[in-house]
Amino acid sequence: MKFDVLNPYSESIEATFTINNQQLVEAALTNANRYFETAKRGSFEQRAQQLHAIATAFRTNAKLLAKTATQNMGKLLQESLQEANAAANIADYYANNGPAALVSKDYQYLGTKRAKLTYEATGIVLAIEPWNFPYTQVMRVFAPNFLLGNPVLLKHAKIVAGCATVFEQTVWQAGIEHGAFQNLFVTNEQVADIIKDQRVQGVALTGSTKAGKVVASEAAQAITKTTLELGGNDAFLVLPGADIKQAAKDAATSRLRNSGQVCTSAKRMIVHQDVADEFTAALINEFKSRHMGDPMAETTTLAPLASKSIQTTLQKQVNLAIQHGAKELVHGGIDDSKAGNFFSPVLLTNIDEANPIFDEELFGPVGQLHVVESTDAAIKLANRSQYGLAGAVYAGSIEQAQMIAKQLETGQVFINQPSNGYPELPFGGVKNSGYGREMSDLALYEFANQKMIALG
Ligand SMILES: NC(=O)c1ccc[n+]([C@@H]2O[C@H](COP(=O)([O-])OP(=O)(O)OC[C@H]3O[C@@H](n4cnc5c(N)ncnc54)[C@H](O)[C@@H]3O)[C@@H](O)[C@H]2O)c1
Ligand SMILES: O=CCCC(=O)O
Image (cartoon, rainbow, N blue to C red; front, side, top):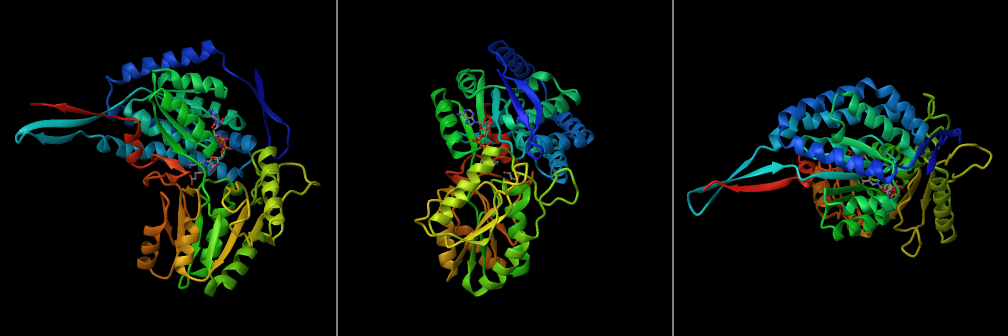
């Protein structure tokens, strides 16, 4: 079975790929398991050196990686280049910090007896990844698991099949045993069979809540651990005392980067009435200032969406919101006279709880603006969501912002700055945004065997 990758700007076929047959899938599982057995005799320090080599290979191949991402899913070339380098930084972070985080811990029992807790590999980890950050999403799972000794099999989104191939080539180019990382082009049914295989001991999924529910229940049948990094409807709170111009600039950057296709972007701007006029005017200006065009060109500031179906779904959501009383502060959407999956920014307001899109994730350059009469109302509205991924609080004092951050039902809060992923910081959510943590030391423990050895 073959499938095409379409260029979101030119709409032409970029490349054609073939779904792997069962023999290839079995060969990949066998290779990965062989790597798992040999890695048990290796050390974290040796693999840290290999991770540095992987980081170097990503920097060397940055232009190829970037071009492929832009051709596959449409993001601006400069964003693609940043992402290739960010993937290298994640590999370096685990090379530099992983071995210390995996040092065994001492315990005492029965008074004077000693025991220790060691961190060991558990087996193959299947990474099921989305198209929006085709390299960093994969590296977030691969780097900590590689350090631990867990082989990783990648099942990427079809849209970015080219990126999956270049990622694999780049890892292998660094001289890494092929069993440590292999890309598979497989259907959802094949994924279900892979999850059943007892050699697979972990499944890390980043994607929609819908996919998370299916994959987590498949993994539950095999008693296989999962981490789920799912959707978000992040709130961006703006309160009196904050730098309002900066807040508006950051809100727009957060909402529109990667053409709005970011799980943790500021999707709901919740603004105190005392600063609403100033914030709204500045935000409208920001939304109107983006320039759509060829994502390869330096002058373009808003790229096409990754696929036709994402574009159509988003327009349907905007139309539905308007039918149910939402008002457009910035009018945009699909321009049928233009080729490519373009969608000009839309800023919506007057969205009440009865509106069907009130708590839907809008995965594209569409913002929601809510004006509230108090800080408590802002917190309450922020928490009225099925999601709990990240959020931002802009306030006059750090103490006030921290008090608000403590009350937000999310896995991450950023104070006076837009949300972002950093290798050093834990990344993940609560509620329907999933569970488990990527990045930081925490990612190292997700699929580790935390083995207790009683020394007597
Ligand atoms: N929390 C995070 O870290 C994070 C990061 C990026 C994207 N996301 C979320 O991802 C979504 C957008 O990405 P998407 O459209 O690619 O999501 P998606 O759920 O459609 O697909 C994600 C991945 O899961 C696979 N998949 C989907 N259903 C599956 C099934 N039944 N069995 C096996 N595999 C399956 C897809 O092929 C793809 O590889 C948004 O909701 C976004 O918020 C979350
Ligand atoms: O889409 C999710 C990833 C966001 C990020 O890496 O900043």
